[in-house]
Amino acid sequence: MFARKAAQFFKNGSKFNGKGNLYFAAAATTVAGSGLGLYYMNKNAAKADMFAEGLHTPNFPFQHASTFGTFDHASIRRGYQVFREVCAACHNTEFVRWRDLIDVAFTEDEVKAMAAEFEYEAGPDDAGEMFMRPGTPADPLPKVYANEQAARAMNNGAYPPDLSLITKARHNGANYVFSLLTGYYDAPEGVEIREGLHFNPYFPGGAIAMARSLYDGLVEYEDGTPATTSQMAKDVVTFLNWASEPELDDRKRRGTQVLIIFSILTAISIYLKRNRFISLKTRKIVHNPPSNWTKKQ
Image 1 (cartoon, one colour):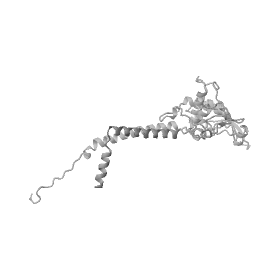
Image 2 (tube, rainbow, N blue to C red; image 1 turned 135 degrees about the horizontal axis):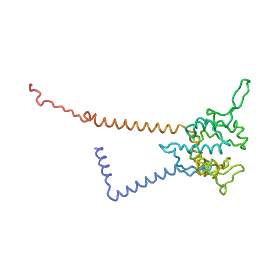
Image 3 (tube, helix red, strand yellow; image 1 turned 90 degrees about the vertical axis):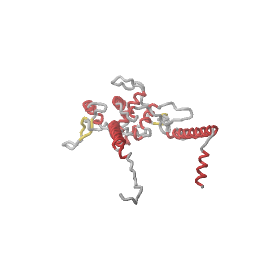
Image 4 (tube, rainbow, N blue to C red; image 1 turned 180 degrees about the vertical axis):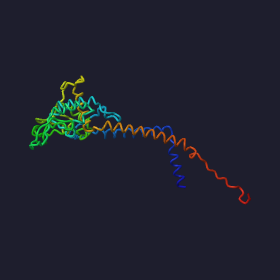
């Protein structure tokens, strides 16, 4: 009896008149709008300590950032040029070797020629002495400083981080590095930046020891691309993203192949189920017992 009463209650409650439907729609809209508003506020929270944490970076349309996107290898080549002429004056790339650039941005002969421009310590020789030799593709890109102490001594106590994995070591990696390189402004009123630091809202605390390093026309691209600040920042970020994730192109290519293969197998399995096993799925078993059990056959 209780079950019947409950069912009747919910059945009657589900019958709205025209005015009730209007109220229900308004309530649903309010709930949906409130939920979207809370989600937006959570994703774009304006916190009191945002200045201390650094301004949240926007998302830029890098070619390799899309689901099936791959690296722009021409941009990697230009980005290496920017890195070598600008960034390499202060930053190391400890985990990148010359041979990694072969068939990515340069040919093997180009890489051998670039590596031979630098000298590396080798040995010992027959006399037990260390000697200097031209670089080979197996060598890492040259270091700027021998150790961290030397780096700090040359930069007023600041330590330029290694850039091999920088886009993986920072939140929102490539977008953060691009915003940092292009985000130098004059300090606003009320913000004091001590001597030797520079205002950059994307850096935690807003004060960074690295001065602005990219200016329009700073480098001359061999392919004729205009060397604007944003173009150079985009190219060097693409190069650094490749250095952090050199397997990205292969991973996406193999992932695409896997998706294609599984899509074909899924289509085949659906076909077999709907067409080859239809007789089993639609089989009807009927039991017709005799109407007269006492009658002898």
